[in-house]
Amino acid sequence: MHLHTGTHVVTELFGMQINLDTIYMTWFTALIVFILVLAASRGRALVPSGVQNAVEMVVEAFCNQFEQNMGKGYKQVVYLLLTLFMFIFVSNEIGLLPTDHLTASPTNDVNTTLGMALIASFCVHFFYVKNKGFGHWAKHFFHPFAVFLPINLIEEIAKPVTLSMRLFGNILAGEILLEVLYSLVPWFVPMVWIAFSLFIGLIQAFIFTTLVSIYLKESVEED
Image (tube, rainbow, N blue to C red):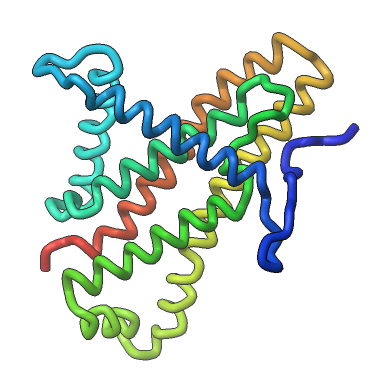
């Protein structure tokens, strides 16, 4: 049995191996997110309904969560966090569509998840320097004592690695299992697993975003 999940259409560009299917599905995911946001924000009403109501409920719930995690400073990064959540959530669910491998989750490619984790890590340090200064940023690597410098550096490297691998592993494993189930029992069991995977995709998007917000706490909180 040959598994399609986890394999990619690869081409070479400027001496680098590029997963074309990941690129296509990333842009497709971004388009879906853009359409959802446009539909929610276009013709906004004082009393929301439909898509606007659903999106506002999600945004309000997340803003409350971010404020608990980071305090009032969450407003500096709320757009970044909401964008991450929506992109990851849509990415996770695209791979569940029964399209005979025409669609795949961008998040089942470690390049995508690692890229998002590195961007999140960069933002953590960027906002730290912006809000507290370069000197304070450099000093925090020696906290609480100078001997802790190697440990703090390893921790900063481990954060994006663990973020990316957790999301990548969960989504890839779920899609592999789904493909196996389709080949063994074509209808009922795969449908049940799809329903379960929809929930898992939501949870994974929430976990990724929540962890990033926790990492950002020290960067945006008031002294």
